[in-house]
Length: 389
Image (cartoon, rainbow, N blue to C red; front, side, top):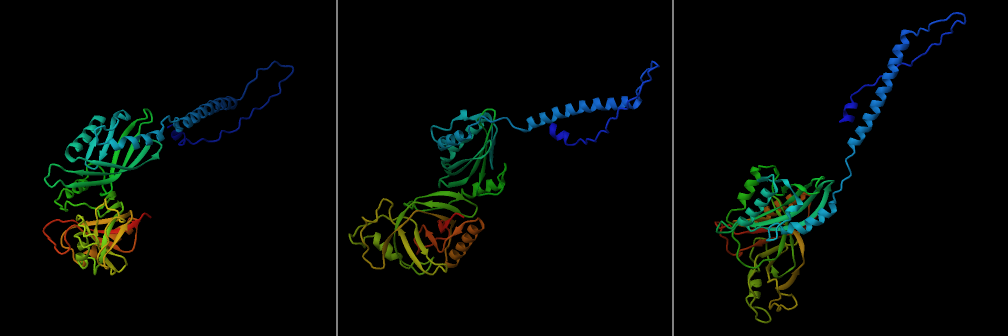
């Protein structure tokens, strides 16, 4: 504040002080009289010296105030601590409350607490109602007293009979108290909404939207991790899987379906029956979405070298390598026009968000391609492989 106040003063130059010498008479005792101007100048000189001394002291003080005290907080240690501690957010071990101030600000779009006890109560409530799974992606220092984390949280609402799954991804900004070296704030930002301030109606609607009835068959599917969930799509990291495939005719078509299901029903070199999985993929390999194959995913424990050979020349086995794909989910009737419309919408969203979508796409169906029940919310998805910009 001292420096701020000093910046508003205007210092005018002080006129030079002139001292005039007077010759004294050798014969007369004289009384030396100094001009009145001398006393005025002397008074100004003393005042100037006092002002300069005060100003020098004030400026020195302001410089000290502007330089923050050297921090003793080991932020790198706290980053390592969060890598170890946050994965226990919802398990029996729990997080270490001693790493937080008693007064800690917790905020997300629909929840707020101002004490560590309230923060822990919120965690307990989520564990009771949702059985959450917390996945920590990374932790990094983003300020002198700030650490940012990126995470995915998957929750199943057990109070509803269909056990809807809620997915949230986002970042948390963890504030550090420089005096205690402990966390004094934890603020969450969801990727799926724009207004993240408490209380966010947009956040509440996002929760309610995910509680709707959405059915998928209880069958094995390729494994993936959700890296990001926005309002329009998900970004998933898939692990490798194997498909049996045949030529198709169009994205929403069923040509070739009997060939690939024939393989798992025993039409193979060992007459081996293989369990059914989901989804049925239709993949387009070109920009016009004209060159198409239809695929059935094989059980994940299978190895391509140990699988029986297909009996038909039009059917083949292929290993799909791990990769990142953006996914747009929808339900209802899936005509060719609708699927192509969804593909264009997804591609546009990815480009707008700075992602680089690759040529082609996959259409995933979790029901028999020959049967469509528009009144049942059976999941369908358009997948586009992409890479980060």
